[in-house]
Image (cartoon, rainbow, N blue to C red; front, side, top):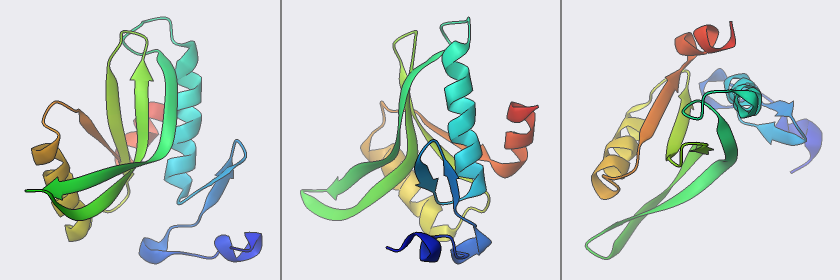
Length: 125
């Protein structure tokens, strides 16, 4: 996709933003990526981010049938050994809510953290 056309407004009114050499779907996602990078310097192992990946593909199978793939915004690994899936949301669509419930049902041992737009202000202040 040409660079300029990628920066047009998207569904839900999101404006893509570039950070760290990557283009994110929204300003919220790019700001959260910056926050995760900042958390690599945290002193508390529970808060310190060791690494993170973006747009993590998670296949959803029910009874051996592929239902869909879910692309979670971030998968985050912490210094205390745990990992979590982080989803940054300005608006929660019905489709997203269904996929989040399906993810939780299919992967009950995984932790899904929803970061809402209003919570981002507290994280970055």
